[in-house]
Amino acid sequence: MIKVVLIDDELHCTESLEILLKSFAKPVQIIGKFNSSIEALTFIKKTEFDILFLDIEMPGINGFELLGQIGNFKFDVVFTTAYDQYAIKAFKYSALNYLLKPVDEVELLECLVKWENKSQKNLATNHFNFFMDVLQNSQITRSKIALPTTYGLEFIEISEIIRCQSDSNYTHFYLKNRESYLICRTLKEVETLLSTNGFIRIHQSHLINPLYLKKFLRNDGGYVVMEDGEKISVSKNNKDKIIDIFNQIERN
Image (cartoon, rainbow, N blue to C red):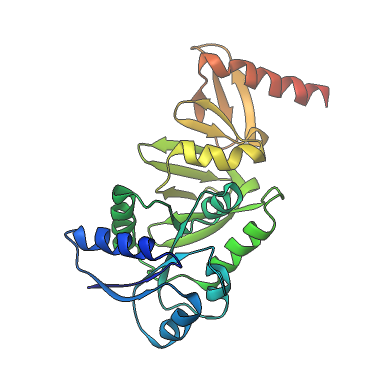
């Protein structure tokens, strides 16, 4: 049985979320439902459960402040929020679970399935702290990213990433130290995050870090050789990007 708690200051939000959760053919039990974050805090501290669906913007104490008063988390958290570009980017960098309001039925079900498949089913304190750091310093270009792997989270230095390769709805990350990770994110999502760090899409299935470009060969349609030895075809639309990179290197 998946025991869940719902917190949102708007009554219609907790009611609609409860209806959706009960409509799934999954063993979900709602053991707490609150429209006041202050009232919910005492309940959360003394009750064992699996997932907290938590609104962010609430009077009294907001969702982040509520979590800040708990300490060690014995449950996982799914944030429910209206669109905010900085918060959404922070969620993606830190790989925290979130759902945009109004909550979509399909996305909610996918969220439950992902939780069932996770090996670490509670929110780690360092994970939450990493998220808050990203959120509070949203204008800073990030040096790290959290990768949600099968075994939990890996906090990776972005500068250590050589390339990323698409695998349907998953993405392979290949690092300088020869380690690799497979995460449940599309390459398009990854590109959105890493483009501010200089990564470029050179092919439908490949995103590269230009710092690790070794060669660009024009034969066979054009391809690059990365420092890990991988040969990657360059699509016609992206050849100019590669030529510009090498021209900049020569000028410097």
